[in-house]
Amino acid sequence: MSTPHGQESLSQALAHIVSGCYVLTVKDLQAGPQAILLSFVQQVGLTPPRIAIAIHKERSVVPALDRAGAFVLNVCAQGDTLLRTKFADPAVTPAAALRAVGAREVGPGLVLEPAAAHLVCGVAQRIDIGDHWLYIADARDGAAVSGRAPFVHARRSGLSY
Image (cartoon, rainbow, N blue to C red; front, side, top):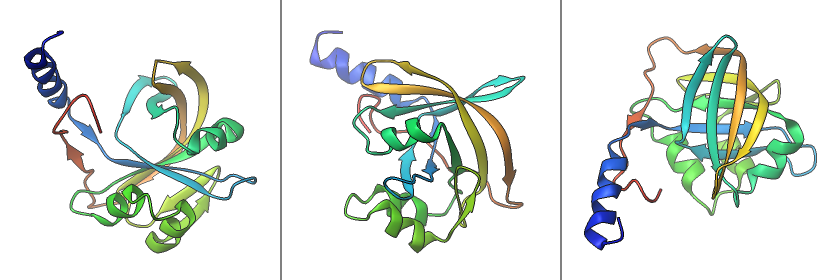
């Protein structure tokens, strides 16, 4: 796929892989509460229940996640834009975004009030996959909010966020 047309074709094909929208939160004693908006999340096991998440290596949450070894994954709700806008804005600190959306501490992270569901997870493995770290995590606890469906979307490009 070395031609520009080939790259565009690949980008559009990858963009058809549907994903969700999530906010990963970590309590960090050194840097304070951390949070990041994610879309690369997938359940990858049943016994134990496992998920995989991919986080760009340069994201500021990586050191906190590595120190904690655990996190809370919040599932963004369909029709809700508050989580997506607050955590996508680089001018808003994670602590300010967490205050703005309403957060309560649960285990290693924070549950966000507008979320459709949350999972409390422990990192089982971190794998280098190029520009991202792939975290394999065991889902240890969680809950869904009745009547809130998860947000699902397809990206415009499969080669960028």
